[in-house]
Image (cartoon, rainbow, N blue to C red; front, side, top):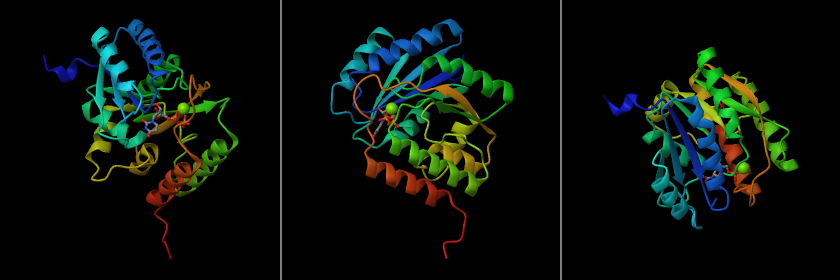
Length: 233
Ligand code: UDP
Ligand code: MG
């Protein structure tokens, strides 16, 4: 049997300096995935961590081979790390989830159900009760608003790292000649069938957000100018 058909669900985790969080996040994901009875793989992408994230992942893989580890040569950023995971994914459905514990793994089956029943190509989490700082929520609201105006696609929370993709959506993302800095805006631009699904957002287990205010500003600026079809003059 072709190995391609053996994996039903791929879970991709972008990871940067999450030594304090990654084991418990993996434990929680496995606890949710096992009872589903669907063949799955977890692709842990170490995005050039400087702490001992990689050593922890290696040890985890030895105990649980369904956890595959990719190590990037340097820190590329959350979205390039996701692309690296997409490249290796074999599942008919691909789920992305953050490493820091903010996205509850218990929502994975719900996102999959919405994707399958609604025949969507992309279902993204819509964070409820966010415990992030004021400026994070402020940027999110502005970018969501502008993106909706530009693309006429209603995604409620494009900054949410938890999402579910059809194999078709992943294939199309990988086929694009450029790599989008922000995946949800690329999906919206492609005209795929998308939806948002409310999820409870928890606090970070340990440590601080890996994004600083200026990197957030540039990421958000990039999203808007790269997706806009409005004339520049
Ligand atoms: N991340 C990454 N590379 C980076 C920054 C972040 O892979 O350069 C990962 C990080 O480890 C986490 C996810 O992307 O799994 C979201 O990052 P974070 O929790 O810091 O962002 P926030 O929750 O503040 O949006
Ligand atoms: Mg986080």
